[in-house]
Length: 88
Image (cartoon, one colour):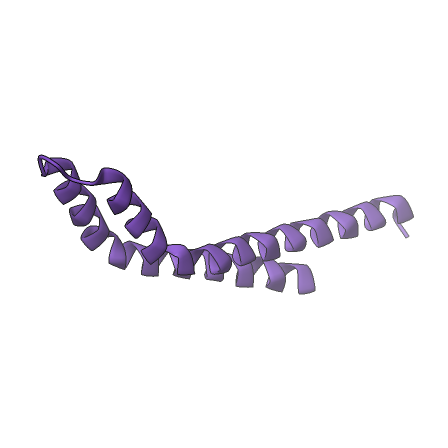
């Protein structure tokens, strides 16, 4: 039960982070395209700026992945425990 909840909460965190980051992506893509199209454009600076604007998304995304991993580990340990006990 707890393992399933951990997995679902982690999945929701990852998906919500991806959706919110995707909402901001078109403006950042336009910024990078403008740096590519400019004759003396600073592509490295544009990439650094895009990464700086998306740094907020790292912790919720990684945290969601960690929660999903913990949920899977708890599920695996529960399955191993049931298998070792046998049919009772």
